[in-house]
Amino acid sequence: MNIAGEVKTVSMTPSIYEYLLSQAEPPTAVQQHLIIRTRGLGDPAEMLIPHEQGVFLTLLVRLTQARRIVEVGTFTGYSALALALGQPPNGHLITCDLSEEWADIAQEAWRTAGVADRIDLRIGPAIETLRTLPQEPLIDLVFIDADKPGYIEYWELLVPRVRPGGLLIADNVLYGGEAADPRATGNARAIRAFNDRVRDDGRVEAVMLPIADGLTIARKRETPEPRIGAPPKAASGEDGSS
View (cartoon, rainbow, N blue to C red):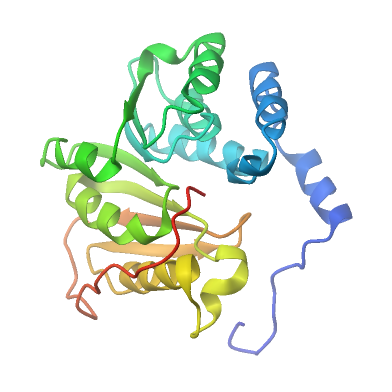
């Protein structure tokens, strides 16, 4: 709500959503093929980010001229593709995933789109991958879209490694609206704890946007401000990768 008590966000109906999609940059042939192939997987396809979110990620990369990107959560590679399409030719994107199950689908799409040379897929626990990254603040942009109980730990490992002025983006921060409930459990509880951590983190300035399942965009400050609260412990919850 705003100060006047009015809800200004438009409720998304199927017809409004179709109109929204019609205003977005259309998917490339490679993206369209990847969408169709991912939807053919059945239930796991719910982890696919919506196309308009992909367009937004590409735009953010271009606006920030992000050359060094780290992604946590690869799935079939759609978000990595969107991020890489916004990078300059000398860009480098590290994407982390626990499973090789969908790696072939992702890599085929990256090769077809001509961006495979800038994407480095790291298979294994993302925590271990992130810990091996240089500790200097060199990363331009981060995208987190993996297991929800891991969000806080990913955040704490990545914020120091992002350059001042760089962006950290986290997906599913509304978790279907469940994160707004103080009694949230499981993944929603983990997301709620993460949202509180970001809000109270003086190292960044952040905003939560009602895009898809909720998207937080945080910019690392040049100089940290005093923290509002102490870093909470990671909340327990169900595993998930979207």
